[in-house]
Every structure is written in C-alpha cells, then in structure tokens.
Amino acid sequence: MLVIDAHLDLSWSALNWNRDLTQEVPLIRQSEAGMEQQGRGANTVSLPAMRQGRVAICLATLLARANPKGKSPLLDYRSQEIASAITQGQLAYYRILEKAGYLRRLDDWRSIEMHFGEWQAANNEPPLGYILSMEGADPILSPKDLQGWWDEGLRALGLAHYGPSAYAHGTASSGGLTRQGVELVKIMDELGMILDATHLAEESFWQALNLFQGPVIASHNNCRELVPGDRQFSDDQIRSLIERDAVIGAAFDNWMLYPGWMAGQTSNSVVSLENVIDHIDHVCQLAGNSGHAAIGSDLDGGFGREQSPGDLDTIADLQKIPALLRKRGYAEADVEAIMHANWLRVFRKAWA
View 1 (cartoon, rainbow, N blue to C red):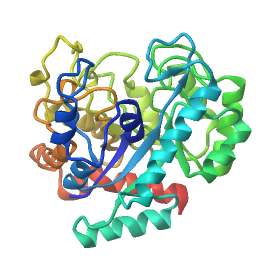
View 2 (view 1 turned 30 degrees about the horizontal axis):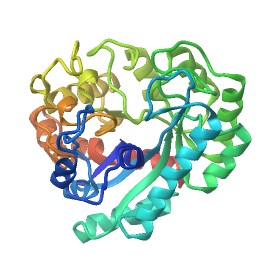
View 3 (view 1 turned 90 degrees about the vertical axis):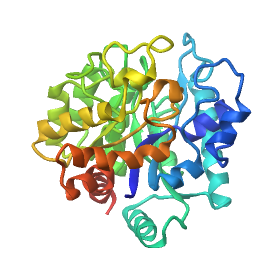
C-alpha cells in the first residue's frame, strides 16, 4: 500500500551524519560500523528503503536551531544567520537529488495528485516525492523573508523545535508566540502555508491555533494520555486539531511510544509497532473516525534501530502497519486513510 510519511529529516541526516542516502541501508550501516555516537550503524532510512516501503511522498525537513546556549553541535547554532545558511545547504542537497532523478519536489495539489497517480500506476518507477517543510522557524531571518522561502518551495512550517525560537516556544519550554511569531503566522495565512503544530509548547500551541486560519497539521506527534510528557499532545489538544480537520502523524521514537522508556537503558525489544497502532487508535477513538490519524515516523531523526520499535528494521517495514490496523478491526478504507488518504485530503484542501 502506498505510504505518505509526514516527517523525515533526510537532508539533516545526510549532511550532519555524512550519510549517502542513495545507498541501501546495509551499506550505510557498514560504513558507520564502530562509530560510538548513538544511532550510528543502525539507521533505518535510505532512498532505496523508502522505495521498497512504497513511501510515495514524504514531508522532508529543513532543520537548524538558533540557540547559542544549546548543547547539540548538530542542531544548535549561534545565530539565526548561521542557522539560515545551514538550511540553505540542506535545501541544496534536495535539489541535487532532484537533478539526479531520486526526488521530485511537490509544490501544489496538481503536482501531488499527478505524482501520486504515477505511483499508483507505475509500480515504483517514479522518483520519490517530497513536500518541503521546516522544523523550527529560526532559519527564517524575519517574517518578511517568508515569501522568499515560499518561492523556494517551503509549504509547511513548524514555529519551534526544542526550547524557545525566534517565533515561539517549543518542547521543554513554556511561553507564547513572540511579536515576530504573531507576524509570521499572519503571513503564513496569506501565502497558504500549512502550520505544523508539532513541538509547540502549550501556550504557543493555543495562541497559534487561535491566530492561524489556514490548514493545520501535527506532522509527528503522539498522545499524552498514553505516554506522559509535554512532547505529546493532551486529549484537549488533539480534539482541537480534529475540530480544525487536522491530521496527526504518529511518531516512531520509542520514548514517545512507551512510558518510561530511556535511551541507552531500555531495550527496543519492549516496544513494537503495536505501540504505534495504540497512538493511532487513540486519535481515532477521540475523533470517532479514522480521518485524523496518519504516519509521521521521524525515523532517523537523530536515532536509529536502537530507539525504534523492535520489529522495525528499516522504513520499508511501514508496510507492516496495514495488517496491524486490520487486526484491530479497521476496514480497508480506514487503513488507506491512515496510510495516505488523510494527508492527501489536507494537501488538497490547502493547495487545490
């Protein structure tokens, strides 16, 4: 079954981890054998693995934080200018893969519809499709620069990542939008850009939803009712997104799937894809239908197999999800909705 995955940090993984994503996963793992950094030699994502898993479209990110006090050398930069330059390099990587025929950028509903139709008809021959998104808005130097990013293909934007950004407060911080954040949200509305509510601190979340009138998604977010913590959404937040006809992509990061899971201590054998289904099902139960749950795996977003469900080897194993949904009693139309059709509905509404 065709898959749309709403969150993959492809260029961040390639450039920051020095990975050739055009290679098969085993070759990438072999090239990283013996490296001590978490996730090395254990990646799950490459372009061939995406093709094997029939991931016809993904939201591919740009990611860099302006955080001079941050402790992550792969995420935190001393100024917005540096963060902006880093994401320009990430954008260049996507363009290089486009020219080589690996990727196809999708900017509007017509291109998405045509691309998805090719995948339905051609049995994996077309390029992999991607919609450009940004996780944390620090690389946008000022709200007036958003038009230029739109012209470059940016179609979905999250205002913050971890901690405060120039525009909002994110995970593990508290507070609302900044003055520039309020202005940025208004320009997003004017352009037709999708707001990605993932990672927003609660005050920023509610303020952004009140201000923003356009389409909203949560590209990769799980449920606080099942796994406590401010990285997850409360049921009230999920219901508010459902009221906006939003779609919530289930993330595959173990600490977001299993209460008390700790990196480097808890085995991935205690987590399975059934835990992913639990979060998908919780969203469906709150909605009373299957129209608001989907996939936003975040695979290889700074971790590998050691922090992914134990029964997932590569992203190709997204193909195990339909059978697990059917086992829970989901009808075929519901399975298709969760695997791709819900995302298509959002894109059609946003850009048709």
